Image (cartoon, rainbow, N blue to C red):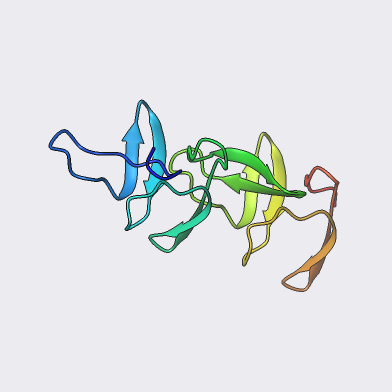
Length: 120
């Protein structure tokens, strides 16, 4: 840690930037080398990194009062229709936020439970 930020260096002592896998976990380091946390936009996709550890999150994650689904294979935020555990969910196209309540999608009304599962 340097001046309150975490940095990683390769075996030759060069500072790492971008995605770094360390002890099985993925981290993102900005162009300055500082480890990022929270939402990161990389390669035209959104990722969420733990505010405490900086580890890339996968699966369902709650940020504030909103739920998101992050692809288990690469951590990218999912949008649109998602079938998970035998249930359908809808993740807002712009924000990735899980839908609840009534929502009109392409001219059809759908009802989602508070846990995001499609009811009708």
